Length: 64
Image (cartoon, rainbow, N blue to C red; front, side, top):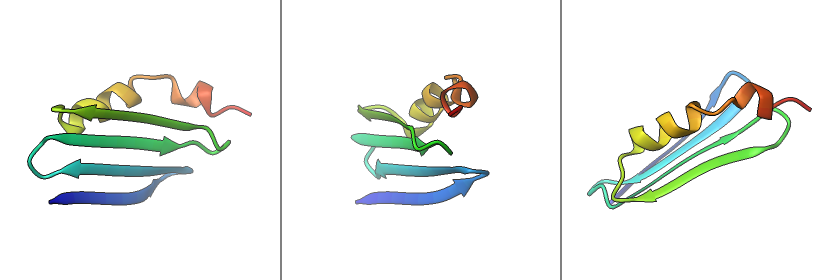
């Protein structure tokens, strides 16, 4: 009923989790300095959450 994927994107660790029926999705990024940026939504597509997080200045947040 759910799909979950964790992977490295450069120095960042990314976790995607979504219900197959589209009822819930989560997207989180652990930055190199340990800061976690997470988006969680109901009745929202995973792609929309990814775009929201990637629209943030992650490079600035990741600075020590």
